[in-house]
Amino acid sequence: MKNEKFRAVIEPFANGFVKNNPTFRLVLGTCPTLAVTTSAMNGITMGLATTFVLMCSNLLISLLRNIIPSKVRIPAYILIIATFVTVVDMTMKKFIPDLHATLGLYIPLIVVNCIIMARAESFANQNMPLPSVMDGLGVGLGFTLSITLISIVREFLGAGAFFGMTIPGLSDFAMSIFIMPAGAFLVFGFMIVCFNAAVKAFEKRRAQGGQAK
Amino acid sequence: MKLLVSSSPHIGTKLTTQKIMIHMIIALSFPLVAGVVIFGLYALTVVFVAAASAVLAEMLYNKLTKTPFTIKDCSAVVTGMILGLNLPPNVPLYVPVVGSVFAIMLVKMLFGGIGKNFANPAATARVFLLLSWTGVMRSYMQPLDYSQGVWKALVSGFTKQYITSATPLADIKSSAVTGVLPDSIRLLDLFLGRTGGSIGEVCAIAILLGFIYLLIFRIIDWKLPVSYLAASALSALVLYRGGWTYILPTLLSGGLLFGAVYMVTDYSTSPNTAAGKVIFAAGAGILTVLFRRFSGFDEGASIAILLMNLIVPLLDKWIPKPFGYRKPVKPEKTAKEAKNG
Image (cartoon, rainbow over all chains, first blue to last red; front, top):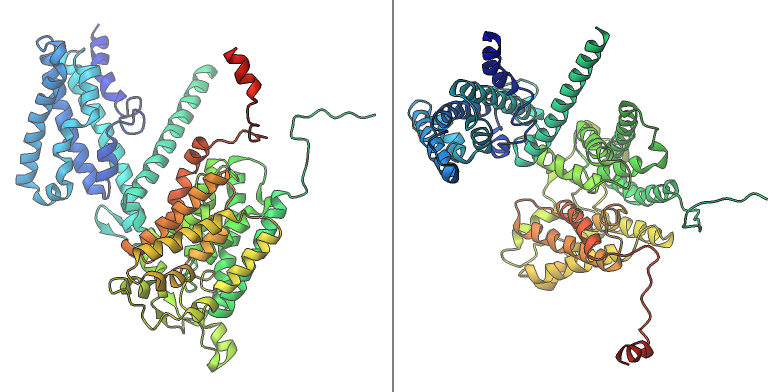
């Protein structure tokens, strides 16, 4: 009994990384994925901001899931999400104004981020608060990981740098197309291919291992 | 008696892909020879590296995906040569390598190999390189000065003893506001190739020779280059204040002529029907001049061709041509009368 409860909490969290990976599996939140990932710092900040909003909105929506009439649930979700986005926006403006300026419009745009809407609609309004929070955390961290990976690749190829530190000898040969929108699509596509190929290979190996036992 | 059962079409031709590509290589060698005479042996090295790395990239892809080798059709050589001829004569050698690998692996092979690429691999790779290493791709050396010894001039690309200068395109662009052609633009120089520019694109006469060669052997369809050039000329007439004085400089400078003969005419990235071909090539011509006149870059030919490549599937869909289709004969009157009766 206790084990089952534990699983109900931990499973949504673990699923967020691979099975429900928002960027590579569900292909949600493509707008920030393509626009913000020009440098690794941008990617990680955007991911963490989204994670915070996702956790809080999942919690509140899960708590209110029996109160919100289902006909007006979308405006209600947006209201809840926008509240937390405003909190994030103001906090970032106060404490990390430089990053806030670079991310600019994309912070307010978290309101209409489809990852958050999707998790609210498909998970939080059908589940208990604790699993919902864990789902928000898992999916959010999965998103953070994915866009950080994309932005590391783009920053490495496009600016010859790693988290803002230029790599000597490489930055002279940096291919600036990778920090342009065209490069974002290229890297995004290849990362989806690599991620799904890796997951497939892993699952195949696990299935074979299970058979051998 | 031996009976063979096969599906139509039953009429064969001796013109194989390999033969077409060898004709293309011969046609491409005209601007290549001109480029080597104008810019020296380093230009030859650039084109050779581009072609060689294109072939190696295709072999590597075949090896990685465990598919049969497809390099025998020589299309990789053609792609590599077109790309190499589209590069400045003084680029560092990593540029053609990366460009060829991008053209073959990403644009051609990932979409299924020859005939299935959505865009011209060489044009796409050139745009990719232009956006990647803008500074390197926009520094053009001046034509060689043979007065100080032929050999010294020929190897000046290796010894870095050359002068970079603005291309005619930059002069045309900056003069577009006033509408008066600068004195540096001389039509004879543009025609013979005594200007700065990419390896293959400077010598108009060599490109025209290649064009005639391809027309004689019926490798390319004349409609594509002709409508491309006509649309470019018309757009130049309309868009430049200088009017007709800009038509010939526009056609002869930069990669416009080279693109018209070797890049617009690519089989897999041009429409199947005559009407589609005219629309495709004319669109590319208008876009080329628009880019030259108003965009941040001097040259727009490869970007224009790339953009129009993306419309080709739509053009083929809108203007369909069923296999073996012939114009219908006018319906006979009796049928109508019978219907009325």
